[in-house]
Image 1 (cartoon, rainbow, N blue to C red):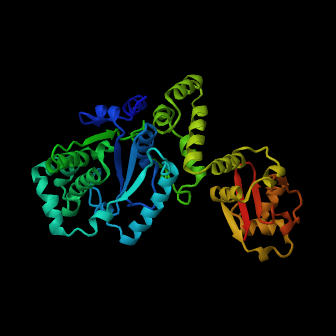
Image 2: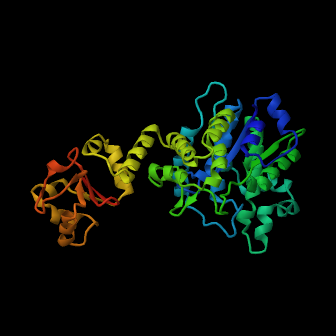
Length: 425
């Protein structure tokens, strides 16, 4: 199956200029997608375009990840109803490094056949002065042409700075530079980028004799409820684990709407058409099983298999009420730390547990499970208080370091749902 056929059956193809199918069939093609480092991490919204690059590479072609070290300093107006707030150069440089590290996990930069490559557009803009830019770039696209673009028309009534208006000029020159220096003839992106991308194809046509460049876009992924894809009630779903934990990343897919599942599976799974259709038939009446398969695949790929294993352990802790003390003893430090991220937790200095402390005092002072010692006593009397999956029946049971698992961790539970982790540091 070639690249275009792959996108069509997955529902990931929106528009493309004439000639795209022919060049992809007859050549090994180089194509790019641009990513501006305006956020400290990529999101699963960005992951749609990363999947396009991944499928492109798996089809035998060479992908370029164009990092917008320069364009990120301007801000793309596409899809925005007001002016962007400019980031500091230090923020942008930091974000760019983080995002590049994420890309290295998701695309193959070591292939001997068609390795993905990074290009930072700051490298070819930093020494260009404004007069040179206006002569080379500004002279070749008319105001009328630029005003006809959807991203501009939506903003022209409410106001748009020259800075953001010039963004499509920068993106057009990006394409020309890659065309001339990397033999890159195809730019891809979301459907909201169609205007910017075709500005690039037009720019190449005007500047290069017999220059032929092409555009391809994907549909903007939307949820069945009409809300923007890639956000939860807590906000963006980030690919950076310190911003969205692997557990919350996993749960995003588990909690997705059944109506969105088929689309998500085709957009984000690397399984083949035959495999996906077989799974859809097998689990047609069990969408939760499909969600678990997709959540496993994506959590393992974007985070790691170790993180996925930890997520399953965390899920067990939160939802399986029949676990034993031995289950907790077998948890790794990383798994304990993930549990501590997902339930209320307290860090205590190791020395603070240097002497015996009555359980009622310890639990009421160091957790949010109880408001007073008397509440702790009522829980003990009602057989509701557990420490490390062991029921507490003694009001005066002493808490010592020896009770902590691996000398560091303690899980305190009040009934089946209320939990608190204590971590000794």
